Amino acid sequence: MRFFASLAATRSFVAMSAAKLEIDPVYPGTAVARMTACRERARSLSPAELSEDWIDVRRKLLWAAGLRDITDAPPGMGYTGHAFNDDNHCDATCMLGEVAHNLNDSDDRVQGIAVNNKLGPGIEVASLPELGVGGSWSTCTNGCHLDPPRDVAHVQFRSRIAFKLVWCPDEYKSFVLVDDDGVFALGDPSALACSSPERTCELFRVTSLRSLCALLAHGTPTGALPPARARRSNFELVKGSKYAVEAVKHGGAA
Image (cartoon, helix red, strand yellow):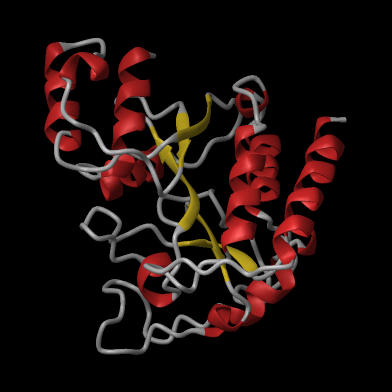
């Protein structure tokens, strides 16, 4: 029933937004209304729902990201079996329709990503239409540790992310979903207190001069998770960035 209620709310939000297409001045490739609807879906997922068997949890993440669960299509043609299922394809990105066909082929291209990186056809097939204008994809997170981020979402698509999945150190059994907005931290380490002084100091170092990303949801799934090395590598890709803060806090509190 929650899914149907959330779907009705999402359709209402999208309908209100359809009359005026909002453009992000910094990342103009962002499908803003679609991104906001994805975040609302992510927020609607409770810790209990995200602590079920990983197969079911990943399907909920796909739903929140506005993606179909497609495992019988060739890679690049709508296949989403890799989404949130490895270390790197963990960014839920919502881009405008024409932007979905951007390639990673400029002098300013994302390092470590294939030249061209043609994702447009797969985005068209896999994106759920009810979230509004544009499409969704689980883009690669590598490069997000830089400021500003230099990952596929921000560089190839000139888009913010709706949310990012980050596995929490040190056990990497729990994950958080964080957004791309956040608030500015003025630097009070007591607000970042965790289970150890060392972890609190690290959080203060990272956040005292950077914007924080809002925590949307978290869970501790069961069953066959992505390999331990992938979960550890996922955190290493964001380590030291604003995207790591909530994962470090949540891991320290676990």
